[in-house]
Length: 295
Length: 279
Image (cartoon, rainbow over all chains, first blue to last red; front, top):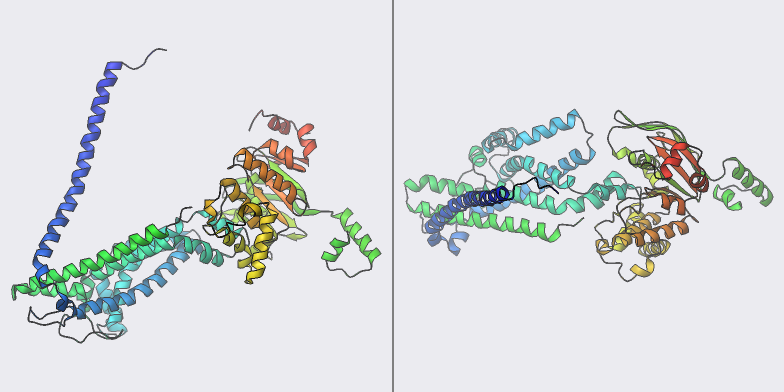
């Protein structure tokens, strides 16, 4: 056989190819490091500012203008109440929409029109949702700036994300499972309920938890709704006024020019909020690993 | 023969019963599916062209042909699974025991309860072996645990896999080998107590040993069920089928007794295909 390659040239090229690979690997590693580095600085700053103020009384105490007596129980409860609104609303409406679009709607202009709009809504700035909530829930429906109004506004904000991720979860269920069900005379609803939804549920839950953590961290829409961070009673129902963790952080940061310790309080609150988000994300990862099916 | 008349709910005296049964037998005897001038399009692609086929009861009918000849499309039309593909259009008629299944009055759920299907790739649900078999009866509203137990056992016995699986009913079906999974899928199809079983290349994903087991099973099943099997494997068709239809480019080139097709085909194209000159 005639060799079409020159052996020495091949060897030289081999060396440069391997070197190239190493250089690119290093570049990608650096970009990963950059993100981690910035995050580390933030964490260190926040922890240094806040850790000395983070104690049990801070978690269970009421809000106060005196930095040494101030606590975030009200904001924590407010966030929990908002979560209690966001979870059912987004799950029911979001998964329902995803099921309709993915499994019932016929392919066509109507469906692609809706899907395009949902994707676009996912990109709308959150402050615009605040205005929407202010117009519809606070003013038109006359709820005032209560838990329900805040929860519904944040639900609207994360719905597009949840719908898209739920659609992807449903789409990822292998078609041959549904075929097996249809082949035995099951209706579409039976197939969805008994085969498709159970198979897609871990991914749907993961998506919904991730969108929930987005809702918990949002501040802009709440400022537009006029959510206060004042000395208000703890919320006890859907129609009580409330404040939430990110609002508390926002106001304390804003007022830290007046009272220097407010910056520390904001730092302590950020630690609490981050811990909460970290917990939620861990649950999401746990669900994904534990319940994900092999097909 | 009286059984047939009984099934039709006829209250007649024994001799009349006999003669009616005979009449039924000689007229439309044993035809489950009567396909007339069936055409099918996927969008603009004309996938089935003027198909005329009669499929007989309690026989194995093999459908052979090269890839893309429409054999899978045809078998999926028999339980209307083909409609899961968007943009499918059909003309003509397929009568199943006298009812046009392409007509508006036919409920697909009803049809698919009488016509079970086994797919190319074994597709058990990510559930236990028991739940896989019980799925069909459950969606048809059977809740009685005892009855479900009986159905599960009978179906697994029917698929000759009961002895292998009876102690593993609560294990996940994914733990089974490919061949076992496919026989489980056959058992699952039996659990809805169909009259017809459609098999779309049921052994193409299996090793020779599992293939042999499925073939033996099919021989047993044809005593009670009408079986229509698409196969890529001509030896398989020759081994286990009673009649064979040869599809080419969306048309039925030849449909006859399997012996005739494989020993003395009337069409040159059939001969070329079965002797391995193309396909």
